[in-house]
Image (cartoon, rainbow, N blue to C red):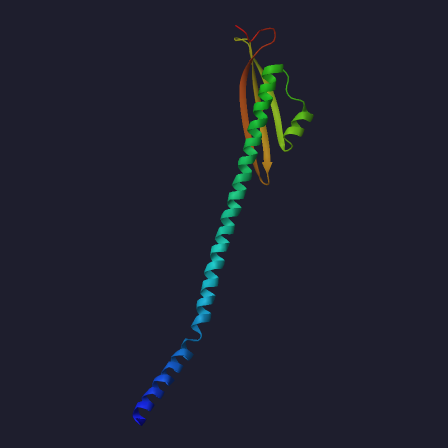
Length: 141
């Protein structure tokens, strides 16, 4: 009986020693988990930042395309470019230049509009071209 009791005492002491030796592992596991979560959070933040920057560049390109198309439409319909005040009201950050070149043989005018939109350090440039019936001629056939 005494021998059995001693064996039980030894087993209990062994369990206590095991639990004492494993006590530090919970903290190590917690620290590793936190480090992995922080790394994943940092990666997600970098991806979100890159996506936002790409979105701003695409927005600038769409604004420049819209400005060029509107300028060319106005030249086609009225023969005159949009006023500067109207351009800055509709597209505040876009700079537009228009070049009109007569084509002698065909009686047409080549209208070329270039729009530039600056986003931080990057400038997006869009150029559009259209041939317009010259003065004194009609669009109808």
